[in-house]
Image 1 (cartoon, helix red, strand yellow):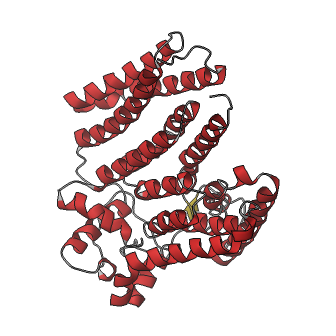
Image 2 (cartoon, rainbow, N blue to C red):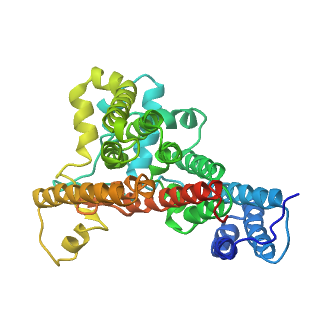
Image 3 (spheres, rainbow, N blue to C red):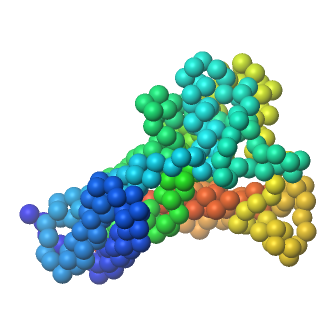
Length: 401
């Protein structure tokens, strides 16, 4: 049986960080356990703490590799279960965000045969999306796969955060199984190191629904057809993935790898993305194209109150003045700069550059009229997954684990 004698010191450091994060979460969430007095919540909190302590012990024990791999899977399962159990224990009397509420109602409308894009939703949530003209957004603003994915959960009487947490957990499992050695530790850290990642899922931000598709695109990056398939599904779930798809197109057009097939690969990728998007959304577009285009593009419109953590934050706090048109022009300029950066990276190091779209895509929102924190934080697990795969590739070529 292969054991961990001679393990790379870097992997021990990574494992120490992972253990610290687990213990931090177990300790900082203890108030939730005491507040709701849910026995299962107490069990998962205790398992989280135990897993962290066992990882610390593994730094100084010669443990079988299979046991370490089991502990990694166990870590992921316990963490996702803990978040899901915490939500079940809380049983909030209201939903927290308008997107959560609208997704739940859109899924129910879809199940009852209605077109979710022709419905005006009567919402009562603490955090709505205000309009400059007054009032709040009451039209469903996301592509159709979002409510199609949520429909089975709605039919079972489960709320949106349960679905979102489940999909984040699926993406974590995919990334973990695709990596090897220290890469698996890095995957776990990348999902744990930003506390708000699953907290946002818990409190009604629905981005996690597209995480498994993007992670699969990262894992299969050398296959433009499959990447197109999964990015098409991601694009059919949220507009936040559209810049990633654009940067991937630039990657396939400019990478020195497979030089003779660059244009063909780019065309295949684009064709599959567009084809999948139309296959998922075509029915609703055909039913009422005006309603669909208005609702889905409305979320990027100037009628929304500006808000965010990018350039627009300077505007909100009075440091600079900016209009919607000016921020749109800045966004176009930023995308051009990011495109040049992607091409430069392809020429310098094409192996690493193929993963750059998953970071440059979210960065494209930095100058946008609205640039919420979740637009950027998704780049952390995507980066962790890509880095883990690079390390796995090095291991297969004879590098250190």
